[in-house]
Length: 285
Image (cartoon, rainbow, N blue to C red; front, side, top):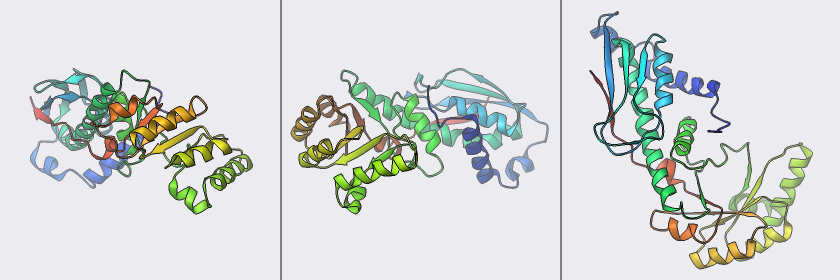
């Protein structure tokens, strides 16, 4: 899985920050109740149907808390799961298992919910050339795991942040004095700063699509909140000259028809802001 943002350093930074937030100066519940060297084991129990995500991350969390914990994976990221499945077994110091528990579950429940929603939508458009994209509508400081979950579910990651791609949205274009001015200024800026970044431009009407095509120098034309007939017209007008992305309020009820217009990409912010977490627990066993 080619995910440039998913480096060992980035994952460790996320885990360290999350553990510091949760444990602080000590897991006093576990330290107070459990003998220091007590050994135990726990099962990761799946309590719903969906796509499992976060197994690899869970392994890293357990080992970050205690390198002596032993994790045996029964399932892997991307596997279809059902109620009653066992995802993994962790063995070692009981205190270490308890200190890891909530972070593992918080991550896996959310990641699995995102992966499940993503897989459902991917399956709905699999008969077309359209590819499902996520957005920047993610939880602050948790973008890395949310976009990772989208990829596990079979979707594609859009830009990770503001730095790795240019996207000229309606406000950029309006503030710049129009689409033409926005594109020309951006191209000058990239050349001046020796930056090689793809440029995507948001359009709201067929007239704006025509304006982008007249100016040129971009890679992707976003078709935002286009009615279905206008979307088909825009895709036909653009042809193979630029890649196209449909966006704006796309749901399970509309995504199939949108994909069948011939767009290259469909972006859905709901993948990372309106999913249902998969019910998962970690129980002694």
